Image (tube, rainbow, N blue to C red; front, side, top):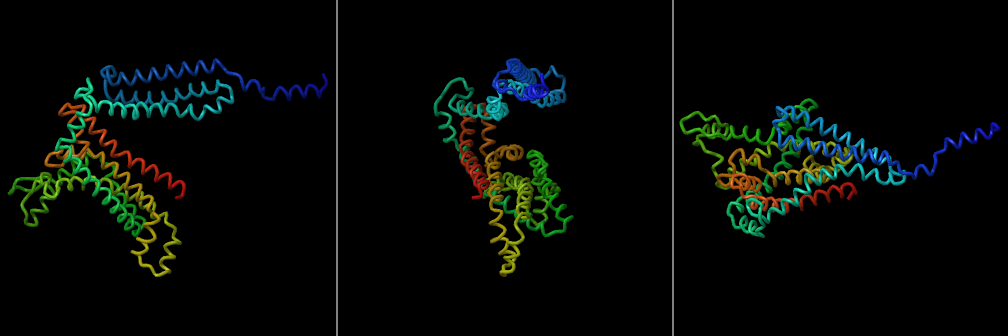
Amino acid sequence: MSTETATVVRERAKEPDPEASLRLNPTKVLIGLIGMAVVVWALANLFLAFGYYPGWFGSKIVIGILAIIGGVGGAGVLFYFLNMFVEGLPNRLSEGVIPYAFLIPGLGLVTLMLIYPTFQTVNYSFANKDSTAYVGLANYRAIFSDNAFWVSIVNNILWLLIVPVVVVGFGVIVAVLSDKLSATGEKAAKSLIFLPMAISFVGASAIWGLIYAYNNPGQAQTGLLNAVWTGLGGSPQVWLQLDTAKLNSILLMVILIWLQVGFAMVLLSSAIKGVPEDTIEAARIDGAGEFQIFVQVIIPQIKGTIITVFVTVFILVLKVFDIVYVTTNGAYGTDVIANLFFNKLFAASEAGQATAIVVVLLIAVIPLIWYQIKHFRDEEAGR
């Protein structure tokens, strides 16, 4: 064989075989499928064991460690076998399948944890109190004829009208004022205002419960609000029982506002800092005052962030539960939909009516979620 012929043979040997790319690798496909099946089976049984046989593991700490190892490690092994399965397919098919293959586990988890329970909830809303027989629309007739349901609806509407507006308003004010401070002062102020975000709703309710605390007349008032009130010459009040003008509900709203102002401040401050300085300087040259600049220049340019914060808090308020449950448990006219659901399900053992309440809440949330998605898409499109 001549040198040229040998060179051509070696070059051809280096070239990929076009037919090889069209062939299936049954070994990889089989190992990938079996591996994925084994991993899913093992993880399912592990997490079921956590729920049904917690005594096997000795303590909750062990369960937590195993859950982290199983969840993170199991996901890694699952994707390893999934990748092997995809690699075993013919190249053309493999390239088309890859994006969908790696989305399937996530979509499956979302389906299992969110979509399936949603359909089951709707299904159970037409069943009796222990979900053993269908009763048609009886649950919906029961809740719509229940005065407690309408009280909770009115309270939820009141929360929706007040809390998001106040949170956004305070968030804008704090963001603007903190930007006027020195760098150190701004950091300190924002840290203090954001700090409540680290507190759970239950913890915040307990803290404010001390502020609203009541002692009998003649005793020292340990509650801050009553201490101030009696210091001004008033008599101590059981604040969370005062339903005149929905005062007790408004006092509960203060807790959520206190928790969420920091969240609004962070997003709005970032948006304000992103406003081009050129537009502000142009407004000053045109003779606009600082208030006019704020209203006519800054606000329009952070409108998208304001809407985002407003809708986020709005959805949160629709689902508010912890604050009401810890402070009054819905007594004295302070009940809300989520707390009513909890009491119907666990205190009254009325699963049918409880799920009907959840369905009503779900229907109320859907338009807001649709609007938020539409708003994000419009922002991405530059509309």
